[in-house]
Each structure stands twice: as C-alpha cells, then as structure tokens.
Length: 507
Image (cartoon, rainbow, N blue to C red; front, side):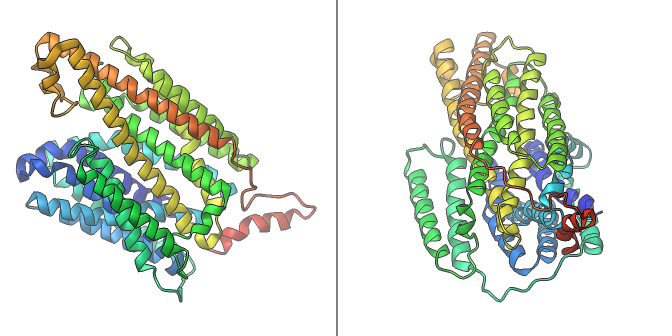
C-alpha cells in the first residue's frame, strides 16, 4: 500500500510537464501571453530543480513522512491554483508553486523507499518505477490532449487533485517512520546560494540560443552569477554545522561516479526524447499522437531490462555489470539513431530506440540504487536529492546543447539545399508544426525534411560521443556489497534477522 501511494506521487511529478505540453496552444488561445509561453514550463522546472536538494535535507533533519506530505500538499495547491488562473502571469506564478512541491515528490519517493527497503531487496521495485516513467511519457500527451479536447485545459491541473488526495490518505494511514527533530539550524545561506546557482544554470540552458545569443550579455552575466553563487555555496557548506548538501558524500568514489553517470544519462535521455518525436513527425510523417506511441519500443526496452536488472540484483547482489552494459547500449543506440535519414523506416528506427531503451533500463534505477548504498542512512535524503538533481540538470543541459546543434544544422542544411528564401523560413525557429509544414511549397518542404534529418543526425551522433564518457566511468564503479544482503552463516535465523533489521527499524 505504501509503494502504491509512492508510485502515485511519482506519477504526479513526472506526468505534469508531459500533459501540459499538449495543452499549451489552447492555453495561449484563452489567456494570451504568447511571448511568455516558455515560462509556463521554465517556472515549473526552475522551482523543481532549485528545491530538490532542500527537500532532501529537510527530510533528513525533521523526518521523511511529514516533509513528504507537505510537498504533496504544496503540489496540489499549485495544481488547483493553476487550474483557476485567469492570466498568463498568474499561471506562471502558480506553476512555480506546483514545481516547488514537485521537487519534494521525486526525492521523497526515492528516500522513503531507501528507508524502508534495503538496497539488496530494492531491485524488485525497479520495474514499478520504470513502469511509472513509461506511463508518464506515453500517457501524458494522450491524457493531456483528451482532457483539453473534452473537458478544457484547466482539467489537466485538476486531474492531479483526486490522485494526490489518494496518495495523501494512503501515506497518512499506512506509512510509519520514526519521527525526528534535529537540533541543528537549517542552512538558509547555503540553500539561498544553491538556489541562485541552479536558477542561473537552468536559465542559461533555457534561454541560450533561443531568447538570447550564447555570447550575449544576458547569458554571460547569468554564467558569472552562477559560478560566483556556486563558489560561495561551496565555501559556506564547508563551514556550517548542517549543510544543505554535505560535501563529504562526494568523497565516496561510487557516489561521485554514479552521480556523473546520472547527469550524462539525463543529458542523453531528455535530448533524445525531445528530438525523436520531431524527426518522426517531420521526416516519417507521424501525427503528434502517433509520435508518442512510436516511442513505445524505447520505453518497453527500458521497462523489461529494468525488471531483469532489478531481479538479478536482488538475487545475486551484483550490480556493476548493469552500468557498464547500459553505457554501451546507450552509446550503440545513439550511434544507430545517428544513421537515420529520410528513407529510414519506422520499424528500423523502432529497433534503434529499443536498444537505447535497454541501456536506459540498465542505468535509470541502478544509479540511484548505488548512490543510496554509498551514503549513510542519515544522509539518505541528500543522497537521493543529489542524484535526482544532477540527472535533472543533465536533462536541461542536454536539451539546450543538443537543441543548439540541431538548430544550427537545420539552418545550414536549409541554406545549402533551398537557398536564402528557404533558410528564412527557419530564421525564427528550426521547428515547424505539421500544419505549417503542409503549407510549404514542395521543394522547400523537401529541403526542410532533409534538414531535420541532418539535424537529428548531429544530435544523436554527439549524444553517442557523450555516452562514451558514461560507459568509461561505469568501469570504475566498485562492487560494494549492498546493505541488507542475505548472508549464509551457520545460523540461518540470524541471517534472516540481519536482512529484516533495516526494515524493522523504520516500519
């Protein structure tokens, strides 16, 4: 029952942006504010990323249950307010409140599972987590479109309320964790500096190459602010009694390695899932709905392999092979995707995506498992939040950097194949919606199709090169025994008691 409630909370956090994306044209049509459209997503992302480490630390200091329930309540409050928004400015502000709560949902789920289930037994739940991710990525656009068409866009936010109420009731009734009360003070200075640094980084990746040129004063200024804030944050964290992000956890080589691998996985995963639907719609002629369903091979590959990896880890206690194989599969899948052109069939691209998904299945939950096993129980929250934060930042950087490569390649190819007039079509944006694409003259449409295929080639090729770094890093992960592993001494009852102890202490 606890796991069921936790999965609902995880689904709420992951589903939200997937649903909102499909409703944005309708929202703009009613509220206006087209110039501020990107902030509907950016405000949520910023608040989520900035609050993630703070939620983790609060859970470590004051107890996981109360902090987690608070994050759910804030998320639901932000959802209700977003559904009632009357202007674009209100919607952006309420989305920030929603994102603030979402930052605690993912961290809370991971940390509570870390408290309740010893790492050796945690693999059996990996498939459930991967399944939730697959449901969010596939079901989000479908649910968002259906709700918007039949009930109105406000229901994409209101739908969170009954789901969240179930999670609140279940967590309150059945989750029993030890209550904590730390005597230390919250590191407000460190939290503020970390928030400023993360905000600067996210804004750079969001605005760079879109709102402002990469070399513009705004982007350079944000970079300077981010560097100074993070440098000051490191200085403060070394001197306070209760740092919001204890730096000593990075002294563990395994934790540092899997955090870096998680960053690279987020970089590749979010980059690929952003540009695959665009390739499918523009080059392969898929509809917006079908492009979501065409991601099924990748998501099924991730789900099946995650189940297998979890089972093997639970039975054998061995896990090092999975980051290594996952890194190789992702590299291979990205390289194969980079070979796609205007003639590539959906079946062929589906096979390539399945290989990429298998690599993700090896890595997504295994990296979190190793990260949690590398920190002490008292640091479970900050360990989980750090791994989540770096994966989120990796996704932001991936979308921004790969997006810049894609845009430049599309414009260069349009200029080469269609001349100045064709290139002018993509001067404002390298992405055209299917309706606009049909209105183009056949020669220009053909040039744009080849340009998108060429841009996708650049995205996936660079993704493959970056994935190699993660595959190499995985070789240096040490096979440290998982806490709670069943041993086989002469007294079998003693072994069973040792395995059950971590759970008994917290339930």
